[in-house]
Image (cartoon, rainbow, N blue to C red):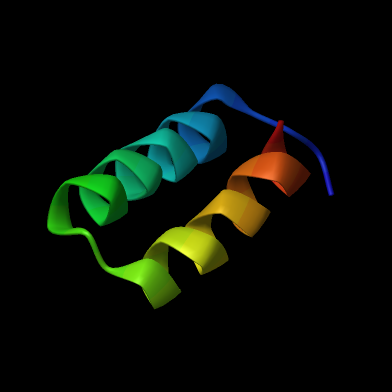
Length: 38
């Protein structure tokens, strides 16, 4: 899957939102997505 700035920005946005909301499940899932995207 090609990496692009939009996908990375979206992943970062979701990671930030999950962390702010203190949603453990969401944070874990988004952390995984962030790791893959990065």
